[in-house]
Length: 83
Image 1 (cartoon, rainbow, N blue to C red):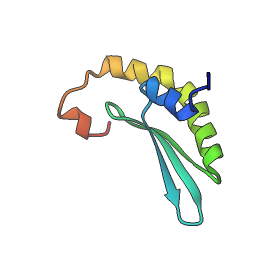
Image 2: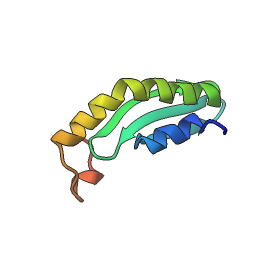
Image 3: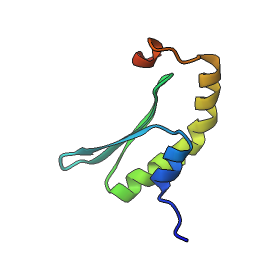
Image 4: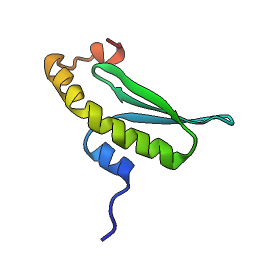
């Protein structure tokens, strides 16, 4: 059986992320928590580097993200604002 793609693994773990192409600039990547706001961002020259950045940084920030979510329950209104 084939291994799931690393981005699918992040999605399955409820890690929210963005990958954006930049004209002649590679990719901008970000980990974003819809409850507590922006977490981390960076740049990568290739898509594979962008995926690796997301996976590596998600591991660093995952525990912190879950702790912040426990401290700040989601409501309809705070889901639209950044802390």
